Length: 263
Image 1 (tube, rainbow, N blue to C red):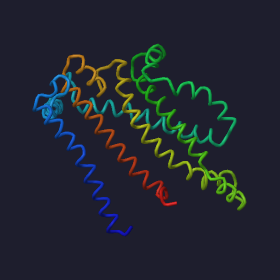
Image 2: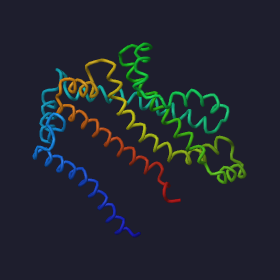
Image 3: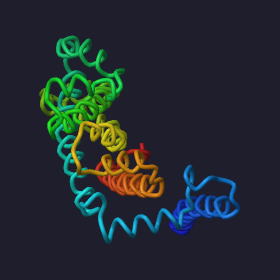
Image 4: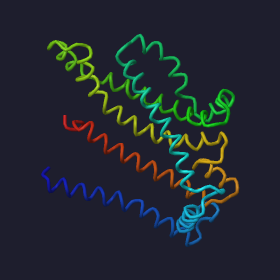
């Protein structure tokens, strides 16, 4: 494929990616205008936009919208960075050492199937209803996702590449640095994208633990009073944050793991 074809293919991709959500919005607006849906169940996009503008100008529950956004982003950022860093480290160790894998196998696999909502009562008992519980709930989920992905990436290392590096006199650190880590990076980058989506999902559940700041609080409070347009506006803000972070991580992945897809 030459440069002209690549450029045409990229333009087509961007065009379809832009038009598909616009088509969904147009169909949604048409259905709402024809009265096919109840405004309480599925309000028109124009009403949701009006609610968003109202929150942007006047805040929600006496608090600026951007304060809610900042509170949620702070919780997600701390939990995500800490969980990803520790999860990648443990996953790399599990992939390289059968002993460490054996030590962590049962605790990790016992925790992984448990939904975060099921842990909320325990976290309240252990850590109260403050910020610690919210951050740790997200942190644990991110850690487990990243640990599994990093371990799978290490085990995807080519045996031929490992043997070739060792036959050339590479020590353990050099084998890890130049063979194992590059092999694990594609899985790690994919894990980062999955973990970010999960972190934003769990954010709403974590903000069930009390408080009056955050997008999760905004959505839950609005739903309690059947303010459906504000619920949709809060969900849309979380969705836009998720879209932006996913595209950012995908872009970083293409730069960091630039050899992926070319082998």
